[in-house]
Image (tube, rainbow, N blue to C red):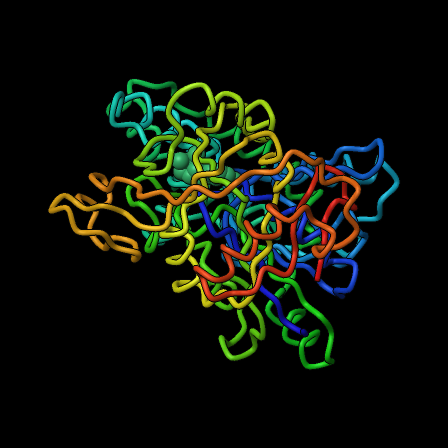
Length: 423
Ligand code: IMP
Protein backbone atom coordinates (compact mmCIF):
# COMPACT_ATOMS: atom_id res chain seq x y z
CA UNK A 1 0.00 0.00 0.00
CA UNK A 2 1.59 3.30 -0.99
CA UNK A 3 0.28 5.48 1.88
CA UNK A 4 -0.35 3.84 5.24
CA UNK A 5 -1.14 5.52 8.54
CA UNK A 6 -0.15 3.80 11.78
CA UNK A 7 -2.31 5.10 14.59
CA UNK A 8 -2.49 4.33 18.31
CA UNK A 9 -5.92 2.93 19.11
CA UNK A 10 -5.86 3.34 22.92
CA UNK A 11 -4.20 5.81 25.29
CA UNK A 12 -0.72 5.58 23.82
CA UNK A 13 2.25 3.28 24.37
CA UNK A 14 0.68 0.56 22.23
CA UNK A 15 4.00 -0.33 20.63
CA UNK A 16 3.52 1.73 17.48
CA UNK A 17 7.28 2.20 17.14
CA UNK A 18 7.78 -1.51 16.77
CA UNK A 19 5.06 -1.84 14.13
CA UNK A 20 6.45 1.16 12.24
CA UNK A 21 9.91 -0.37 12.49
CA UNK A 22 8.57 -3.58 10.94
CA UNK A 23 6.62 -1.91 8.14
CA UNK A 24 9.40 0.59 7.48
CA UNK A 25 11.39 -2.26 5.95
CA UNK A 26 9.11 -2.11 2.91
CA UNK A 27 8.62 1.67 2.94
CA UNK A 28 10.49 4.41 1.15
CA UNK A 29 9.63 7.27 3.49
CA UNK A 30 8.46 7.50 7.12
CA UNK A 31 6.70 10.64 8.39
CA UNK A 32 5.58 11.93 11.74
CA UNK A 33 2.53 14.15 11.50
CA UNK A 34 1.83 15.44 15.02
CA UNK A 35 3.10 15.60 18.58
CA UNK A 36 6.60 16.22 19.80
CA UNK A 37 8.97 14.84 22.42
CA UNK A 38 6.01 13.75 24.55
CA UNK A 39 6.22 10.62 22.41
CA UNK A 40 8.65 7.88 23.26
CA UNK A 41 9.26 4.89 21.05
CA UNK A 42 11.49 2.07 22.17
CA UNK A 43 12.93 -0.21 19.51
CA UNK A 44 15.11 -3.15 20.48
CA UNK A 45 17.53 -4.36 17.81
CA UNK A 46 19.69 -7.19 19.11
CA UNK A 47 21.82 -5.70 21.86
CA UNK A 48 20.94 -2.12 20.94
CA UNK A 49 17.98 -0.24 22.37
CA UNK A 50 16.83 2.93 20.65
CA UNK A 51 14.64 5.38 22.52
CA UNK A 52 13.25 7.90 20.10
CA UNK A 53 11.19 10.96 20.94
CA UNK A 54 11.45 13.35 18.02
CA UNK A 55 12.55 11.39 14.97
CA UNK A 56 10.24 8.98 13.14
CA UNK A 57 10.99 5.38 14.07
CA UNK A 58 11.92 4.68 10.42
CA UNK A 59 15.30 6.24 11.16
CA UNK A 60 16.41 2.96 12.75
CA UNK A 61 15.93 1.25 9.35
CA UNK A 62 17.89 4.01 7.65
CA UNK A 63 14.82 5.25 5.77
CA UNK A 64 14.28 8.85 4.69
CA UNK A 65 12.27 10.54 7.42
CA UNK A 66 9.99 13.54 7.61
CA UNK A 67 8.93 15.58 10.62
CA UNK A 68 5.75 17.19 9.31
CA UNK A 69 4.23 20.62 9.83
CA UNK A 70 1.81 19.19 12.42
CA UNK A 71 4.65 18.38 14.81
CA UNK A 72 6.19 20.50 17.52
CA UNK A 73 9.97 20.36 17.68
CA UNK A 74 12.15 20.73 20.75
CA UNK A 75 15.47 21.54 19.06
CA UNK A 76 17.56 20.31 21.95
CA UNK A 77 15.85 16.90 21.87
CA UNK A 78 15.97 16.63 18.08
CA UNK A 79 19.64 17.59 17.90
CA UNK A 80 20.43 15.13 20.72
CA UNK A 81 18.81 12.34 18.69
CA UNK A 82 20.51 13.35 15.44
CA UNK A 83 23.88 13.36 17.22
CA UNK A 84 23.17 10.04 18.89
CA UNK A 85 22.22 8.36 15.60
CA UNK A 86 25.33 9.71 13.92
CA UNK A 87 27.47 8.47 16.80
CA UNK A 88 25.98 4.99 16.37
CA UNK A 89 26.90 5.03 12.70
CA UNK A 90 23.54 5.91 11.11
CA UNK A 91 23.31 8.59 8.48
CA UNK A 92 20.86 11.41 9.20
CA UNK A 93 21.27 13.06 5.78
CA UNK A 94 17.78 12.01 4.78
CA UNK A 95 15.96 13.61 7.71
CA UNK A 96 13.65 16.45 6.64
CA UNK A 97 11.93 18.85 9.01
CA UNK A 98 9.01 21.00 7.91
CA UNK A 99 9.66 24.72 8.14
CA UNK A 100 6.05 25.08 9.26
CA UNK A 101 6.42 22.90 12.35
CA UNK A 102 6.49 24.91 15.57
CA UNK A 103 9.44 25.17 17.92
CA UNK A 104 9.08 24.30 21.56
CA UNK A 105 10.68 27.18 23.44
CA UNK A 106 11.94 27.09 27.05
CA UNK A 107 8.94 29.10 28.24
CA UNK A 108 6.59 26.42 26.88
CA UNK A 109 8.27 23.87 29.11
CA UNK A 110 8.26 26.25 32.09
CA UNK A 111 4.57 27.09 31.60
CA UNK A 112 3.61 23.42 31.17
CA UNK A 113 5.34 22.62 34.46
CA UNK A 114 4.02 25.65 36.34
CA UNK A 115 0.49 25.15 35.09
CA UNK A 116 0.44 21.49 36.13
CA UNK A 117 1.75 22.48 39.59
CA UNK A 118 -0.93 25.10 39.90
CA UNK A 119 -3.73 22.73 38.84
CA UNK A 120 -2.82 20.48 41.80
CA UNK A 121 -5.47 17.74 42.07
CA UNK A 122 -6.92 18.78 38.73
CA UNK A 123 -3.62 18.36 36.88
CA UNK A 124 -3.76 16.67 33.48
CA UNK A 125 -0.62 14.67 34.15
CA UNK A 126 1.18 15.98 31.06
CA UNK A 127 4.69 14.90 30.14
CA UNK A 128 5.74 18.48 31.05
CA UNK A 129 7.62 18.86 27.78
CA UNK A 130 5.88 22.08 26.74
CA UNK A 131 3.54 20.43 24.22
CA UNK A 132 0.27 22.13 25.22
CA UNK A 133 1.69 25.67 25.54
CA UNK A 134 3.47 25.31 22.18
CA UNK A 135 0.30 24.22 20.33
CA UNK A 136 -1.62 26.97 22.18
CA UNK A 137 0.79 29.59 20.81
CA UNK A 138 0.42 28.08 17.34
CA UNK A 139 -3.36 28.50 17.57
CA UNK A 140 -2.88 32.03 18.97
CA UNK A 141 -0.64 32.76 15.96
CA UNK A 142 2.26 33.85 18.17
CA UNK A 143 4.36 30.69 17.81
CA UNK A 144 7.93 30.49 16.54
CA UNK A 145 8.33 28.11 13.62
CA UNK A 146 11.18 25.93 12.51
CA UNK A 147 11.68 28.12 9.42
CA UNK A 148 12.49 31.02 11.74
CA UNK A 149 15.86 29.39 12.39
CA UNK A 150 16.81 30.22 8.79
CA UNK A 151 17.20 33.90 9.63
CA UNK A 152 19.02 34.83 12.85
CA UNK A 153 17.59 38.37 12.84
CA UNK A 154 13.99 37.18 12.60
CA UNK A 155 14.64 34.47 15.17
CA UNK A 156 15.96 36.96 17.73
CA UNK A 157 13.14 39.38 17.04
CA UNK A 158 10.49 36.72 17.54
CA UNK A 159 12.10 35.55 20.76
CA UNK A 160 12.17 39.15 22.00
CA UNK A 161 8.49 39.72 21.22
CA UNK A 162 7.47 36.42 22.78
CA UNK A 163 9.55 36.96 25.92
CA UNK A 164 8.03 40.39 26.57
CA UNK A 165 4.74 38.60 27.20
CA UNK A 166 5.86 35.21 28.45
CA UNK A 167 8.10 36.64 31.18
CA UNK A 168 5.21 38.69 32.55
CA UNK A 169 3.08 35.60 32.51
CA UNK A 170 5.75 33.47 34.21
CA UNK A 171 6.52 36.02 36.92
CA UNK A 172 3.08 37.40 37.66
CA UNK A 173 0.80 34.44 37.08
CA UNK A 174 3.02 31.50 37.94
CA UNK A 175 5.52 33.07 40.29
CA UNK A 176 8.25 31.45 38.18
CA UNK A 177 11.66 32.64 36.94
CA UNK A 178 11.73 34.78 33.77
CA UNK A 179 14.04 34.03 30.80
CA UNK A 180 16.90 36.24 29.66
CA UNK A 181 16.68 37.32 26.01
CA UNK A 182 20.41 37.05 25.25
CA UNK A 183 20.72 33.61 26.79
CA UNK A 184 17.70 32.17 24.93
CA UNK A 185 18.61 33.90 21.66
CA UNK A 186 22.19 32.63 21.65
CA UNK A 187 21.08 29.13 22.64
CA UNK A 188 18.54 29.01 19.78
CA UNK A 189 20.99 30.53 17.33
CA UNK A 190 23.35 27.66 18.02
CA UNK A 191 20.51 25.16 17.53
CA UNK A 192 19.70 26.98 14.31
CA UNK A 193 23.19 26.29 12.93
CA UNK A 194 22.69 22.57 13.37
CA UNK A 195 19.07 22.43 12.20
CA UNK A 196 19.29 24.58 9.07
CA UNK A 197 20.29 21.80 6.64
CA UNK A 198 17.28 19.72 7.66
CA UNK A 199 14.61 22.40 7.15
CA UNK A 200 12.62 22.03 3.97
CA UNK A 201 9.19 21.87 2.31
CA UNK A 202 8.18 18.43 3.50
CA UNK A 203 4.73 18.55 1.85
CA UNK A 204 6.53 18.62 -1.49
CA UNK A 205 8.75 15.68 -0.53
CA UNK A 206 5.77 13.54 0.52
CA UNK A 207 3.71 14.52 -2.52
CA UNK A 208 6.55 13.65 -4.88
CA UNK A 209 7.15 10.33 -3.17
CA UNK A 210 3.47 9.39 -3.54
CA UNK A 211 3.35 10.54 -7.16
CA UNK A 212 6.34 8.33 -7.88
CA UNK A 213 4.56 5.32 -6.41
CA UNK A 214 6.72 5.15 -3.30
CA UNK A 215 5.46 3.53 -0.11
CA UNK A 216 5.00 6.16 2.60
CA UNK A 217 4.31 5.42 6.26
CA UNK A 218 2.66 8.01 8.47
CA UNK A 219 3.55 7.42 12.07
CA UNK A 220 1.09 8.72 14.65
CA UNK A 221 2.33 9.68 18.09
CA UNK A 222 0.16 9.38 21.22
CA UNK A 223 -3.21 7.86 20.36
CA UNK A 224 -6.92 8.10 19.67
CA UNK A 225 -8.07 8.53 23.26
CA UNK A 226 -5.47 11.28 23.75
CA UNK A 227 -6.72 13.15 20.66
CA UNK A 228 -7.59 16.78 21.35
CA UNK A 229 -10.98 16.44 19.62
CA UNK A 230 -11.84 12.77 19.93
CA UNK A 231 -10.07 11.74 23.13
CA UNK A 232 -11.06 11.86 26.77
CA UNK A 233 -10.82 15.66 27.05
CA UNK A 234 -9.33 17.37 29.03
CA UNK A 235 -7.03 14.43 29.77
CA UNK A 236 -5.61 14.47 26.27
CA UNK A 237 -2.66 15.84 24.38
CA UNK A 238 -2.87 19.09 22.42
CA UNK A 239 -2.71 17.66 18.91
CA UNK A 240 -4.75 15.27 16.75
CA UNK A 241 -3.24 11.79 16.59
CA UNK A 242 -6.26 10.42 14.63
CA UNK A 243 -5.48 9.10 11.16
CA UNK A 244 -7.20 11.88 9.21
CA UNK A 245 -4.70 14.36 10.63
CA UNK A 246 -1.88 12.53 8.86
CA UNK A 247 -2.97 14.44 5.76
CA UNK A 248 -3.07 17.85 7.46
CA UNK A 249 0.05 17.14 9.49
CA UNK A 250 2.24 16.60 6.44
CA UNK A 251 0.37 18.63 3.82
CA UNK A 252 -1.31 16.16 1.44
CA UNK A 253 -4.96 15.60 0.50
CA UNK A 254 -7.00 13.06 2.48
CA UNK A 255 -7.72 10.91 -0.60
CA UNK A 256 -4.01 10.10 -0.82
CA UNK A 257 -4.21 7.84 2.24
CA UNK A 258 -4.79 4.22 1.29
CA UNK A 259 -4.69 2.30 4.49
CA UNK A 260 -5.08 2.83 8.24
CA UNK A 261 -3.53 0.35 10.66
CA UNK A 262 -4.56 0.68 14.28
CA UNK A 263 -2.16 -0.47 16.97
CA UNK A 264 -3.58 -1.73 20.25
CA UNK A 265 -2.10 -3.65 23.14
CA UNK A 266 -3.77 -6.96 23.98
CA UNK A 267 -4.65 -5.14 27.22
CA UNK A 268 -4.72 -1.39 27.98
CA UNK A 269 -2.43 1.08 29.69
CA UNK A 270 -2.82 4.73 30.47
CA UNK A 271 -0.36 7.33 31.83
CA UNK A 272 -1.60 10.42 33.57
CA UNK A 273 -4.98 11.24 34.97
CA UNK A 274 -8.51 10.59 33.76
CA UNK A 275 -11.17 7.87 33.81
CA UNK A 276 -10.21 4.34 32.79
CA UNK A 277 -13.17 1.92 32.98
CA UNK A 278 -11.30 -1.36 32.51
CA UNK A 279 -8.50 -0.48 34.95
CA UNK A 280 -7.55 -3.58 36.95
CA UNK A 281 -8.30 -3.55 40.65
CA UNK A 282 -5.95 -5.37 43.00
CA UNK A 283 -2.68 -7.22 42.61
CA UNK A 284 -3.09 -8.14 38.94
CA UNK A 285 -2.53 -4.49 38.01
CA UNK A 286 0.95 -4.54 39.53
CA UNK A 287 1.62 -7.95 38.01
CA UNK A 288 0.70 -6.76 34.56
CA UNK A 289 2.83 -3.62 34.99
CA UNK A 290 5.87 -5.70 35.89
CA UNK A 291 5.31 -8.32 33.18
CA UNK A 292 4.73 -5.69 30.51
CA UNK A 293 7.44 -3.29 31.81
CA UNK A 294 4.79 -0.61 31.86
CA UNK A 295 6.83 2.44 32.75
CA UNK A 296 6.88 5.60 30.63
CA UNK A 297 9.68 5.99 28.07
CA UNK A 298 9.69 9.77 28.46
CA UNK A 299 8.84 10.31 32.12
CA UNK A 300 9.50 6.92 33.73
CA UNK A 301 6.04 7.10 35.33
CA UNK A 302 4.17 3.89 36.16
CA UNK A 303 1.46 3.19 33.63
CA UNK A 304 -2.00 2.28 34.88
CA UNK A 305 -3.02 -1.14 33.52
CA UNK A 306 -6.40 -2.50 32.50
CA UNK A 307 -8.03 -5.38 30.65
CA UNK A 308 -8.68 -5.03 26.95
CA UNK A 309 -11.49 -2.52 26.37
CA UNK A 310 -13.38 -3.29 23.17
CA UNK A 311 -15.82 -0.40 23.64
CA UNK A 312 -12.95 2.06 23.43
CA UNK A 313 -11.30 0.07 20.64
CA UNK A 314 -14.53 -0.03 18.60
CA UNK A 315 -14.58 3.76 18.91
CA UNK A 316 -10.97 3.98 17.70
CA UNK A 317 -11.88 1.85 14.68
CA UNK A 318 -14.68 4.30 13.91
CA UNK A 319 -12.93 7.65 14.34
CA UNK A 320 -9.78 6.58 12.51
CA UNK A 321 -11.30 4.36 9.83
CA UNK A 322 -9.01 1.53 10.97
CA UNK A 323 -9.05 -1.27 8.43
CA UNK A 324 -6.46 -3.55 10.02
CA UNK A 325 -5.33 -4.02 13.58
CA UNK A 326 -1.96 -4.86 15.10
CA UNK A 327 -2.37 -6.39 18.55
CA UNK A 328 0.82 -6.01 20.58
CA UNK A 329 2.21 -7.60 23.74
CA UNK A 330 -0.02 -10.68 23.61
CA UNK A 331 2.79 -12.53 25.44
CA UNK A 332 2.14 -10.49 28.60
CA UNK A 333 -1.26 -12.20 28.89
CA UNK A 334 0.35 -15.68 28.94
CA UNK A 335 0.69 -15.30 32.69
CA UNK A 336 -3.01 -14.93 33.55
CA UNK A 337 -5.37 -17.94 33.83
CA UNK A 338 -8.49 -15.89 33.02
CA UNK A 339 -8.72 -12.91 30.71
CA UNK A 340 -11.59 -10.50 31.25
CA UNK A 341 -12.37 -8.44 28.15
CA UNK A 342 -14.61 -5.39 28.41
CA UNK A 343 -17.25 -5.69 25.69
CA UNK A 344 -19.80 -3.13 26.92
CA UNK A 345 -20.17 -0.30 29.41
CA UNK A 346 -22.99 -0.14 31.93
CA UNK A 347 -24.25 3.44 32.15
CA UNK A 348 -25.77 5.27 35.12
CA UNK A 349 -29.32 4.30 34.15
CA UNK A 350 -28.34 0.62 34.04
CA UNK A 351 -28.42 0.45 30.24
CA UNK A 352 -25.53 -1.31 28.52
CA UNK A 353 -23.80 0.05 25.46
CA UNK A 354 -21.19 -1.22 23.03
CA UNK A 355 -20.59 2.34 21.80
CA UNK A 356 -18.23 4.78 23.47
CA UNK A 357 -20.21 7.42 25.42
CA UNK A 358 -20.28 10.79 23.70
CA UNK A 359 -20.51 12.76 26.94
CA UNK A 360 -17.84 12.92 29.61
CA UNK A 361 -20.18 12.35 32.58
CA UNK A 362 -21.43 9.12 31.03
CA UNK A 363 -17.88 8.01 30.40
CA UNK A 364 -16.77 8.94 33.94
CA UNK A 365 -19.58 6.86 35.41
CA UNK A 366 -19.30 3.94 32.96
CA UNK A 367 -18.82 0.51 34.55
CA UNK A 368 -17.10 -2.16 32.48
CA UNK A 369 -19.06 -5.29 31.53
CA UNK A 370 -16.58 -8.10 31.08
CA UNK A 371 -16.64 -11.39 29.23
CA UNK A 372 -13.97 -13.69 30.56
CA UNK A 373 -11.95 -15.71 28.07
CA UNK A 374 -9.68 -18.60 29.08
CA UNK A 375 -5.97 -17.82 29.22
CA UNK A 376 -3.07 -19.99 28.07
CA UNK A 377 0.14 -21.00 29.78
CA UNK A 378 2.40 -21.67 26.84
CA UNK A 379 5.03 -19.03 26.06
CA UNK A 380 4.56 -17.50 22.62
CA UNK A 381 8.19 -17.10 21.64
CA UNK A 382 8.28 -20.32 19.60
CA UNK A 383 5.41 -19.22 17.33
CA UNK A 384 6.29 -18.38 13.75
CA UNK A 385 2.90 -17.14 12.60
CA UNK A 386 -0.57 -16.38 13.92
CA UNK A 387 -1.63 -19.93 13.10
CA UNK A 388 1.02 -21.28 15.53
CA UNK A 389 -0.49 -19.53 18.56
CA UNK A 390 -1.86 -21.76 21.34
CA UNK A 391 -5.60 -22.39 20.85
CA UNK A 392 -6.74 -20.03 23.62
CA UNK A 393 -4.49 -17.23 22.35
CA UNK A 394 -5.83 -17.69 18.83
CA UNK A 395 -9.39 -17.58 20.15
CA UNK A 396 -8.57 -14.37 22.05
CA UNK A 397 -7.42 -12.75 18.81
CA UNK A 398 -10.44 -14.08 16.89
CA UNK A 399 -12.77 -12.75 19.58
CA UNK A 400 -11.30 -9.26 19.08
CA UNK A 401 -11.75 -9.57 15.31
CA UNK A 402 -15.38 -10.67 15.63
CA UNK A 403 -16.28 -7.93 18.10
CA UNK A 404 -14.62 -5.16 16.06
CA UNK A 405 -15.24 -6.53 12.58
CA UNK A 406 -11.63 -5.78 11.72
CA UNK A 407 -8.85 -8.23 10.85
CA UNK A 408 -5.95 -8.55 13.24
CA UNK A 409 -3.06 -8.93 10.84
CA UNK A 410 -0.10 -8.50 13.19
CA UNK A 411 0.43 -9.78 16.72
CA UNK A 412 3.33 -8.76 18.97
CA UNK A 413 4.75 -11.55 21.12
CA UNK A 414 7.86 -10.04 22.71
CA UNK A 415 10.19 -7.07 22.99
CA UNK A 416 12.53 -8.09 20.20
CA UNK A 417 12.23 -6.59 16.75
CA UNK A 418 11.44 -9.99 15.23
CA UNK A 419 8.72 -10.87 17.73
CA UNK A 420 5.76 -9.90 15.53
CA UNK A 421 3.58 -12.57 13.94
CA UNK A 422 1.66 -11.92 10.78
CA UNK A 423 -1.02 -13.77 8.86
P1 IMP B 1 1.14 16.18 26.95
O1 IMP B 1 1.04 15.53 25.61
O2 IMP B 1 2.54 16.17 27.51
O3 IMP B 1 0.50 17.51 27.00
O4 IMP B 1 0.30 15.27 27.97
C1 IMP B 1 -1.11 15.15 27.88
C2 IMP B 1 -1.58 13.73 28.19
O5 IMP B 1 -1.13 12.87 27.16
C3 IMP B 1 -1.03 13.14 29.50
O6 IMP B 1 -2.02 12.30 30.06
C4 IMP B 1 0.17 12.33 29.05
O7 IMP B 1 0.46 11.28 29.95
C5 IMP B 1 -0.37 11.80 27.73
N1 IMP B 1 0.69 11.46 26.78
C6 IMP B 1 1.38 12.31 25.99
N2 IMP B 1 2.25 11.64 25.23
C7 IMP B 1 2.07 10.33 25.50
C8 IMP B 1 2.65 9.13 24.99
O8 IMP B 1 3.51 9.12 24.09
N3 IMP B 1 2.19 7.97 25.56
C9 IMP B 1 1.24 7.94 26.51
N4 IMP B 1 0.67 9.04 27.01
C10 IMP B 1 1.07 10.22 26.51
